[in-house]
Length: 106
Image (cartoon, rainbow, N blue to C red; front, side):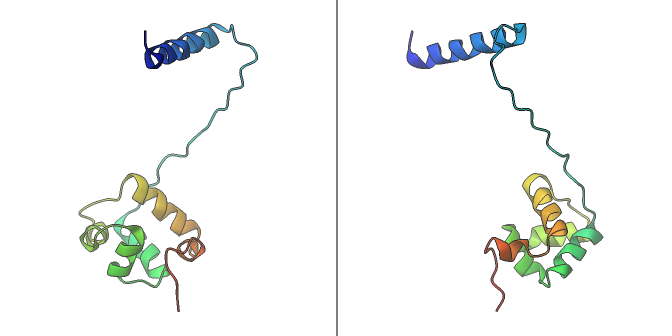
């Protein structure tokens, strides 16, 4: 067979052996991921206002369209996935944009 197939088969065999308890020296790292928060329109606007930004600037900093931010703040759409994580981080740390040079205040 080819190397790709052989590699997959080896990985599957190792996974089966691990599950059977036949690989006692294998290190396992378990990672728990916090569930995504949900933000309502008022919370999103509050996060933006704490950043002292217009919808246009906030959208640019987040990498979304102005229409997206407008829809979030109007309550017609809700942020999902990456945007939700970023809103959570901004809510925890109002200086996040500056820390990572996403914006520069002058």
